[in-house]
Length: 50
Image 1 (cartoon, rainbow, N blue to C red):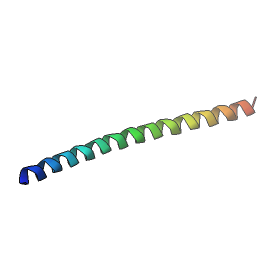
Image 2 (spheres, rainbow, N blue to C red):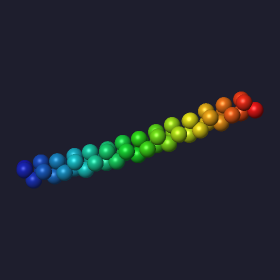
Image 3 (cartoon, rainbow, N blue to C red):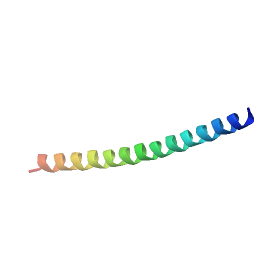
Image 4 (cartoon, rainbow, N blue to C red):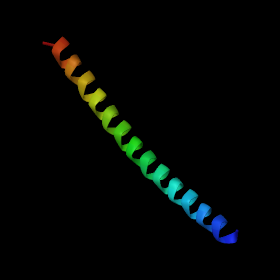
């Protein structure tokens, strides 16, 4: 019974690690998205000034 609990704890820990990695990827994606949006806004402003 203790072995089963330990195994479950290990699996839960692995899931948390995966969640952390996914969150890091999402944060990176959002940063890149923000950069693209800023670049687009700047490009649109430059077009308006032509």
